[in-house]
Amino acid sequence: MQFSSALLESAVNEFSRLPGIGKKTALRLVLHLLKQDEQQVAHFSETIARMRKEIRFCKRCFNVADGDFCSICANSYRQQKTICVVENIRDVIAIESTQQFNGTYHVLGGVISPLDGIGPDQLHIDSLVERIEKENTEELIFALNPNIQGDTTIYYIQKKLLGRDIRITTIARGIAFGGELEYADELTLGRSLQNRLPVEKYMNR
Image 1 (cartoon, rainbow, N blue to C red):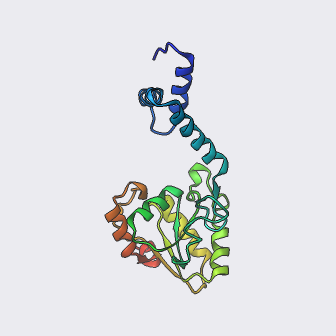
Image 2 (cartoon, rainbow, N blue to C red):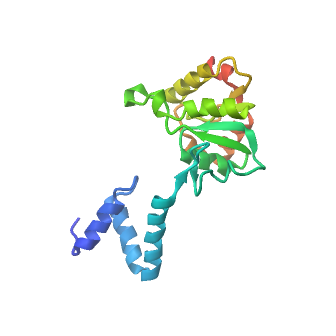
Image 3 (cartoon, helix red, strand yellow):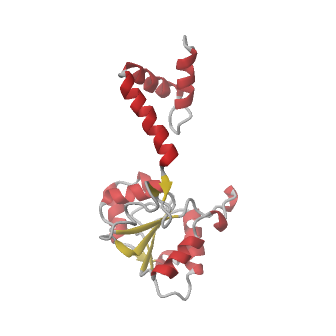
């Protein structure tokens, strides 16, 4: 791809670093910005820079937040003794879109995957166990992607919670094995949450 401007080429290269954005799409985005008012483009760039600089992660659940705690953890109308365990922030957004869950979350930051060099110590598992003990959690819902890595993570956490008086469930198999939560339609994901199963039945299926 040939460019008549080094600045244009540099901007296209930066946009193409984003996931799912190729050079052609990046060029289309950059040309779109060139057509916009200078103030609008300045506001766009300032918003991105401010987001990266000021955004935080909730001290309780590791969701994105504007302060020490996210809006979900700070909401007294949520069921604070129910925790939905997810792999990443995209899964929180996917579940919230269903409007079928009124509890809180705990973002692990990944799943156990020895082949990728990801072990339990690299995830927010210990903080989850501490949180359950401290807050007297009543139900833990696993909403991890239905694949080997997700199942391994569920099994590991379940073992760490043996002997504790807590209901442990997982979303129903409305999500196909090997699928990903963020790509599931809202109806399927919502029904999976409503029809969640005791984790013992899930792991021994």
